[in-house]
Every structure is written in C-alpha cells, then in structure tokens.
Image 1: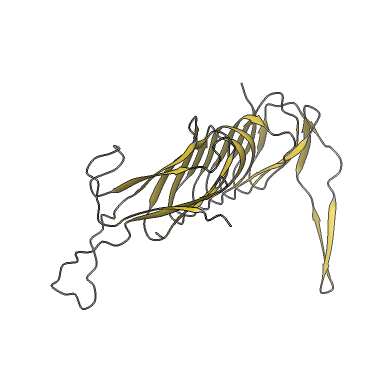
Image 2 (image 1 turned 90 degrees about the horizontal axis):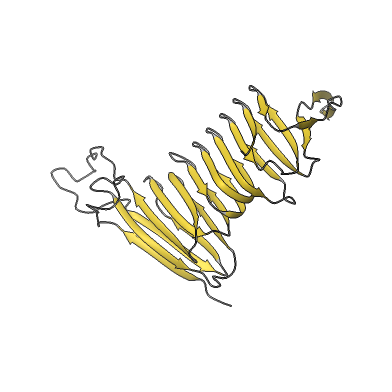
Length: 276
C-alpha cells in the first residue's frame, strides 16, 4: 500500500518581524508547499479549523501552497501555580500544522485549539474542497472549479467566481456565492440561520428552486416559474398525538428547470441573482 506523504510544520518560538502588513511583530507565519501525485488530474483539499479563517484561491500552478499564520495574544499572562517570581521562557500554542497527500487528496490539520489561525491556500484551478471553520473566522473561496463543501458556524462564507457545484452552510453569518458556471447535473444547497443567502447564477442556467425564509423575504431577477399549487400538509403521529404542518417552501423553475438548488434561512433575506 502506498504510504501518504506527510509534510509538517511546527514553529513554537520563531517570531516574524517582517512579512505581510497584516502580521504584527510577534506573530507567526510559515509556508507549506505540497506536490500532487498526479499534477495533470484534479485534486481535493480537506481542511477544518476550530478558530480562524480560511481563504482558498485557484491559480495556474500544479501544487498546493499553504500560507499559515497565527496571532499571539496581547493579554497579560496569568500567574502560573508554583511559579511566583519566575519568568516563563517557553511558548504555548505556536504554529503547528501538517498536511498529508495521497492520490491528489490533501488533508490539512492543526493541533492548535486555543489560537486564532489564518490559512491562505492556493490550489490548482480544478480542485474540489471540503473546508470549514467554527469560531472567529470566515471562509473565502475564489476561482475554483469543482465540488465544494463549505461549512462555518460563527462567520461568513463567500464564494467568488466559482464553477461546478456547492453545498454551503453557516449558522451565524452571511452566505454569498457567485458562480461563473454550474454543473447542471448536481443539486446544490445553501443555508444559514442568522444572515442573508445571496447567490448569483449564470443567466442561461437551468435549475429548480426550493426556497424558504422564516423571518425574511425572497427576491430574484430571474423569470421564475413559480409552482402555485396548494401547499402540502404533512401529518405525523406520536404517542397518540397528531401534528399537522404546512410545507411553505417556495418552489419554481428557471429556464425550464433542472437540478434542484435549495436555499434556506431563518433570520434574513434570500437573493437569487442573475449574473450580468
């Protein structure tokens, strides 16, 4: 069995005093370059963070390039038990990130849970993504053509000039996507709890729409053939009690219809835009 290549980076006490303007003195920054097993074929990137932001950009190269940085806290350190009068000379929570590559699948991981990390990743233009973060960060993707699975919890998701298909979900944040082309055979889904869903699609794209906003409005500049049939009632029974709920999704077809695109939120508006 082929052993995956492992590229690891650990920087615990190496502090940059230069680099990008966004990095203050005392911040950490390092770079990983991951070659692919078969650069002529599309690949897949998998990366998830606990705290921090992820930006993925498609480019004309044939390697995955990761620029990782983490900010050091400005808060004064709390006295440690049994260390009164002593000065700590070790550093906690530096920059620790590793990547494995096998058959064009790149897995990126980090053991940092208490530090805010920023990842700027360049991938070949034809690449699939499985990317997510949880706290204190957003996810940006631009110029990528592939199958995109994007998640966030407390932050935005912004997909710009992308192609292929996407499933994207956040809880507290804006979800915005701008497609150059779409895969007509792949269904897509976009959802958030608190925030707008704003998706721009090619003017000639053919798709079915399934839309629902509990506390907001739905807008589109496409000519949507709305399904005006009576909403369907769903009856469920449990412990002798019966519940009847009405399906209040807005459904329709654009340019004759095609694969389904679902958009849903609770607090916010939904925008289905036609690319200019």
